[in-house]
Length: 522
Image (tube, rainbow, N blue to C red; front, side, top):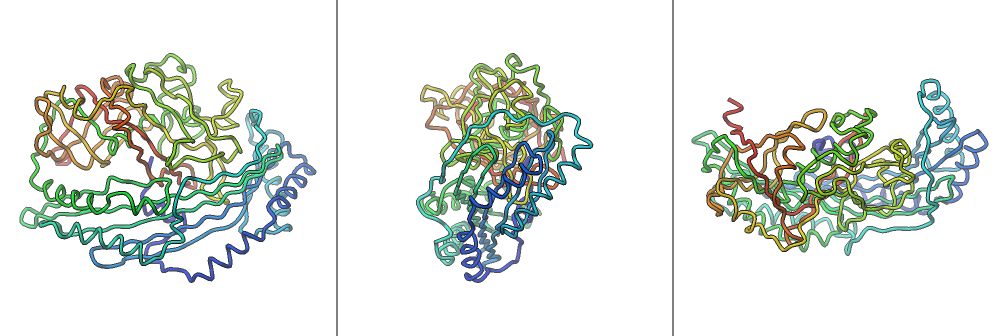
């Protein structure tokens, strides 16, 4: 389940209203990170842990950088730059985990923290019900870098501000628009992993997240409507800012926000739905992504999103959807926010089916989880959002396969007599087992006799996860496939934020129950 933007900024160290730190702060920490002999520190952890009786040990030495710029109309509201550098140590003693971390990266501190992790493992052992067993590792010595052309941390701040102010100016030129705000967030992760299994891995990731929101107000009626950006964050560099048509979308969003004020309220009932990838990604995240997390199904995890209606004994035969529904987990997908070279267990990124021809076939796993369902290897879903956070199972990119044929959105609409076309994410609600849900969107369009007609408002649809995906009778071809996601998938206590994408084509669903949210509120 996605946490709020404020929660995400809090967990990453970005606070609203902060100011730009002087460049020497970053240069000093960058120099400290460069001087650290990571291999030597890894050797200290492993030798210390082994001497104290650990059967496994690893260290992550990570540096994180964040830059955020926010504007409203003609004003800059916030500029924030933060970074974090430190290390975390995991040890396994008598089948029990111990973890400790520190922001002081030195030989003596690494020895102290390793001993502390061992003490924590011994304390945890008292209440350990079943010893942890890790599936065999693949020894990896490698480096990996995400795909980007221009590092946003090397771009002038004024260029970023002017980009956002241009979006605001474009939207405000549309008659009827009252407010517009825009922001951009850049994230850089520099990660080192070493384990007692012999792995040594370096990774460098860049993510970029521009966004805007346009508001139109009808003062006479006391009504306002909004339309947010559809682009969403991507694992790309500053080229994403320069190549995506942000100003064109801002103008379109402005017109649609105004149009929403006069849109016709939806009549409750059953409709065929045609869902655009900008909307369907959230439905996928909540109903498919979370329900196929093995730790939730086992009852190990219930924070934020609850558990799962799926159980291990259903693997291979439970009917999750129609035969055209094929979902895959993927940590290799270009531009995917959860794409990595290796996870925080040191397992290589990979792609695998979760749902195949409508049948639930597999789970998201880590080295700790895989053996519990008879797997001999992990799918590489272990992740921590900071050097100071405990690594645990996190969602990979979970995506819906497009049709092999060149099916267009118009093709899907043409066979709908009475339906609704939905773009963008809106309100959502789902139960604690990812079974019953309700979703809204950004914009809604009436479909009548195979044609897109006028705009609707106050639309939300309800269903149950297997009923909904079983009602899918059409998916678009590769040309309709898009990748969307968020940086703030919350899980755990204390909360950790995971970046994750969901790719999908446009898709059609038959006879789904639709509500009028205005009537529901009253």
